[in-house]
Image (cartoon, rainbow, N blue to C red; front, side):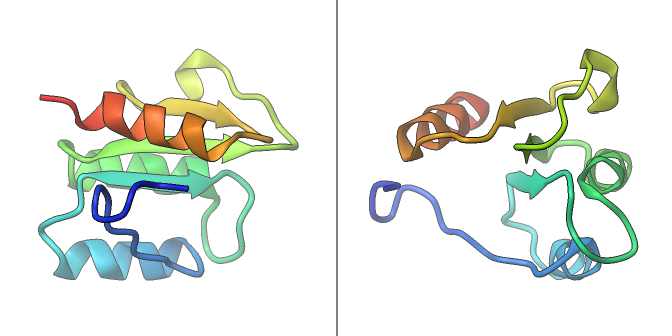
Length: 99
């Protein structure tokens, strides 16, 4: 479980909703996305869109069905294979948001 108050989580049902949220919120520092998801784009295309429009935002992509190569995510992106523990998520988020 993520420590209370350490990270605020905003859920999006798909990539289109995630983009809408990013367009209205200036406080998002990390996007955590599944590679396989419904909507107009998968998690890898979402990661590329985020990197192009909001370069400072860190990206974590996950999947239990596919493994991706180093060049599949934008620079600085991180792949977290499923299954993962809450501790692994927390560690990844802390590393990405550390000053």
